[in-house]
Length: 626
Image (cartoon, rainbow, N blue to C red):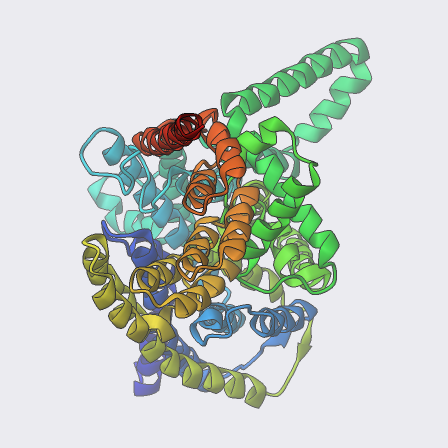
């Protein structure tokens, strides 16, 4: 083997291994806070990008045939990335670093797939391997051999919630199902005389994919029912049905059966329809409050779209805008008692299509849908099993938030990149264009590593300082948080703690500034409660009342704003309002009974009794004086 051939082989192998490593970012997780776990995954992506881009650039320069056909979907993906960065509501460097890193990953995969289509089966095998590892992890958690990442759930895989865990498995199931349907692997011969042939068969990617698909499906069949993920079950059934219709002669058999036995066909069809309706009703009633909460979120999100139809509220600003819209809905009286009961302050729309439209408007939504539709078209032309993975991911996105999580974004990038290059469509540009794009991506990714490290260290420092925050050393915390602010100025929980510490340190105007920024990224009414406390401490009773009322209108199922209002009225001598608010607090039926609720009601009852006793004393004094 010549030196050049050896060098090309080593570069190709390293590139493929780095591409495989991207899929295993999902397992980079510690028993830590979810925020730090997310940052660790992002940090791994930032470290991999310069390495992967460098070797892809080497491979491209060493390749004899530099054939990259850039398609309309590539152009739309590029425009979408630029638009998302431009519409970022945070205006911090890190806010758009992850989308750009995913754009670099897309560029790398597109060029790798153009240089060698044989890399796709290797990455499919890597995808199945992550699914097998996740399923095994879930089983170990289920049987107590490993701990989960959430105290309330026994099985979460490498995620912090069983919902994303079941969705991740659901995206891989139809891919595995496709390969079980279409591949016909020949069992390896175990005789010693055919050892070499056996090795060759097992080293064939199709054979490995076939057996990995069977293993994963068997494990997923056990794990998925235990996750109780309704949308995951629907995604598996929906994408599996599409696979059966496209990859088997089942539709032809059904048409033949219909022509021969129309009455029996109608009877069976009616029974199936009834079964589907009953199953859907059962799934709804299984977690009725959860379904009702999501329906409320979708209604409020639709209202946001009507108010900001063209360009949206800004990337990353969904939660804050949702809080404002939900408040407006409650003020208008358009909400029912059941909707008040299930209302919350969600971080996601539980429908990625809605959330994309809310944040980026019709412009961003059309760009995204165009890229997805063109990807469906490309995968359908290839008759590629990844088509069904993309189908499942889109179904999951209808009632969950996968595209807000990095592992799912990596899968989406993989599906879209694999769909584009078919050797016919698109236009070939000079090789220098690809070299320039890769060089730019390499330079940016090298710079992004330091930013990711600074962000990660800031999160670690914040976690350490939370001990002092819990111990109520607020002056010290406020000073330390001020140094962390430049890196964490788009993290709402940090901004709340910072604003609260400033409130306790009697720096009220600065506290309002931090809390108002936090309210841009969160719909939690606690931001407005603390702003009310700031106004109350400054002696601005009218502003304090306004903030407390605003907090209550955001979530009328919360007692705390009413408690603060009652105390404000008692302390400022507004007796009529105090009595009225005290009655509301004492008659309030909390969504979740707790010790805190009992303590708040007890304090208001004592204030009410003291006010009544003072009133009685004054009346007696007047009578005695007469």
